[in-house]
Image 1 (cartoon, helix red, strand yellow):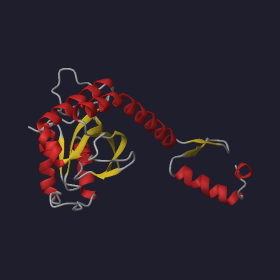
Image 2 (image 1 turned 60 degrees about the vertical axis):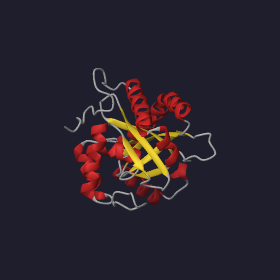
Image 3 (image 1 turned 90 degrees about the vertical axis):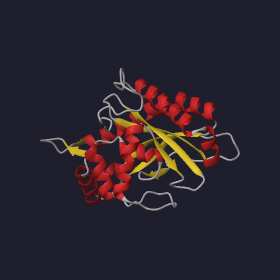
Image 4 (image 1 turned 180 degrees about the vertical axis):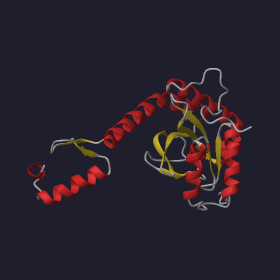
Length: 239
């Protein structure tokens, strides 16, 4: 390794020790050799999952864009944020723009609230205990108990709304996507100018996005047969 990297042995030793400590490398027992660690394999598996997700989601995003004419995206939970992994933008001059890789706060974005609401209770509470409920607009929920109550409502109705909570004059709706284990793995979102979204009807858009997310879940192998659209799988609906 020292020769291949053209680095001093002491430097390489420290690098290898760090990689081993973090699970990216491991020493083969009884030898002086090293191999890739399980954590690196895990990262590779996550990349494959993300590619499968975006590939399967593409026709559903396209259908929603054609039907409603607004920007659509799909996001996954990464730490305490919802990260956009794919998107299709509205062709209209006045539209919501976004970028793949953009990170949104979980407490006030539609995608974040969906991913948080349908996460396992222990994971949800851990995130809630660690995040700062930063205010972005006058409508941002900044009270922990109010947010918990709001997430209960998200689980009951099967989708979330960002009603100008991150940016004024922007409304977003999001619904959960489930994986083959019955766990929420992503959120599909429609975003647009507040007046136009409300004019089209929040209920109609919500119904479309929930149906699309449900169909995508089926494509991903989610155990949805005989279950109500929009409800929880492993995480049961709130009574």
